[in-house]
Amino acid sequence: MEEGPYKCVRDGNGTVNRVIRMGTRKSQLARIQTDYVAEKLKTLYPDVHLEIVAMSTIGDKILDTALSKIGEKSLFTKELENALERNEVDLVVHSLKDLPTTLPNGFTIGAVLQRESPHDAVVLHPKNSGLTLDTLPDGSVIGTSSLRRAAQLKKRFPHLEFKDIVSFSYAELL
Image 1 (spheres, rainbow, N blue to C red):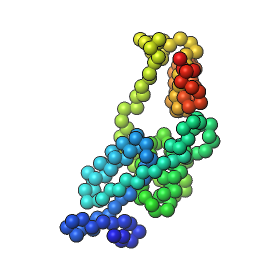
Image 2 (cartoon, rainbow, N blue to C red):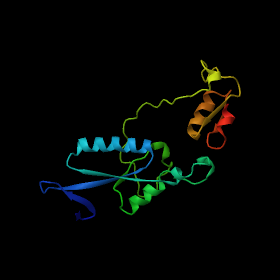
Image 3 (cartoon, rainbow, N blue to C red):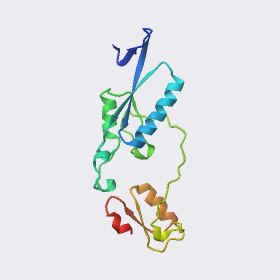
Image 4 (cartoon, rainbow, N blue to C red):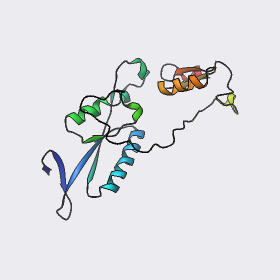
């Protein structure tokens, strides 16, 4: 049942409830984040029906090239933004790290949830057992797919070398 520009559903009691269509990426992390947002919205608005619309983005489809080398902006957001413009979804859930520094005209960040732990994990080769990033030998190679993370780590650990994990083979880390 459609009413006005919004999608609505009628529950078993005949009550009409608005449907909020939430756009998200199909990735496991995006789905976890979107389910968390849906849970929060359901707590605040128990009568609203939530529909999750998952889609693949350019960033999800390019698996063999470092995303920083593609030159395309909005790799993880463009398809979702297009769905918003076409009124196929009412809102989208993103990681802030995936958003461009300037949002397209007409778009706004409507809410930012409290951040979970920002700590990352470092997985070291068994030959480096017991070492930390501080104590790794000079020139040790650290692989990451995040430009932001590499920049932060370079500043803190200038004795290490950082490589995009997509642009070289795992054997190069050994």
